[in-house]
Image (cartoon, rainbow, N blue to C red; front, side, top):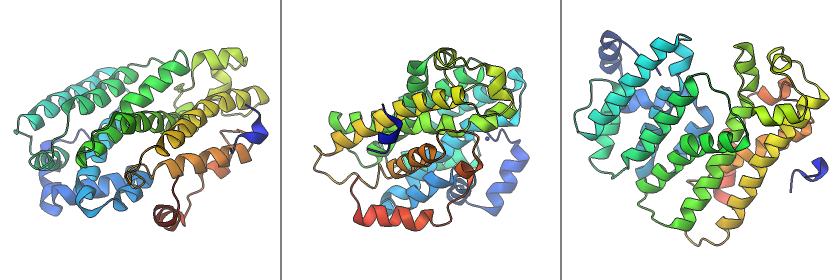
Length: 303
C-alpha cells in the first residue's frame, strides 16, 4: 500500500482491600471507575451505548481491564500465574452463580442474571492474555491477529450478546474490527513495553525490515522501524476497511456498538501524519475533545 494513500492492571487485591472498596463503592461504581481509569476511550464509547447496555458493557470491559493489568502488578512469572489462576477460578464461580466478594465478579454475576453471555468469550480472553504473559512474542502478523481476535473481538461478541444480536455477518464485522483495534492497541503500547524490554511487534516483520529488538528497546525511531510499523498498521487498516465494507450490507443500527472504530481510524491517521514514527510524542497527547467527537460521530456519521 502506498503511504500517501493510507488514509482511503489484574488488581489481585487481598480481601481486605476488596471489602474496603465495596464499602465505599457499589460493584457497579467500582467497575465504572476502573474502566474510566484504565480504558478511557472504551469507557467513553460505553457511555454512548443505549442505557440498558451501559452497565453490562462496563462490567465486560472491567473484567478485561482486570486481566490486562495482571502483568503490570508483577514481573514475576510465578506470581502472575497465580493471579491468572485466581481469575480462572473466579470466572468459573461467576458462571456457577457463586462469585467471590469482589466488585467485578459481583457485578458480572448480577449482569448474568438478566443477560445470557457466553463463558467461552471470557475464557478465550483470559487464556489469550495468560499465554501472552508467558513471555512469548508474536512470531508473525497472523499471531498478532489471532491475539487481537481473542482479546478484542471477544468483547464485541459479548456486546452483541448483550443486545441479543445473532447474525453471522455482524459477527464478521466484529471479528475484523476487533483485529484492527487489537493491532492498534499493541502498536500504541510499543513505547511502554520497550521500556520494560518487552517486544510486542511481530518477529517476521522486524526481520524483514532489518530491525533488531535492541533498537526497539532503545526507543529510537529509524527508517527501518517506521517501515515495520507501517506494515503492521497497514494490516490493521485492511481489517478496518473490511469491517466498513461489511457494515454497508447490514441494515440494523450497530454504530453504537462499533463506535470504537472511530478511535482506530483516528489513530491510523495520526500515525500516518508522523510518518509511522511510533515513538513520536504527538501520538500520546490526550484528546480533550474526544468525548464530543465521539458523540458527533454517533449522531451524525455512519462509518
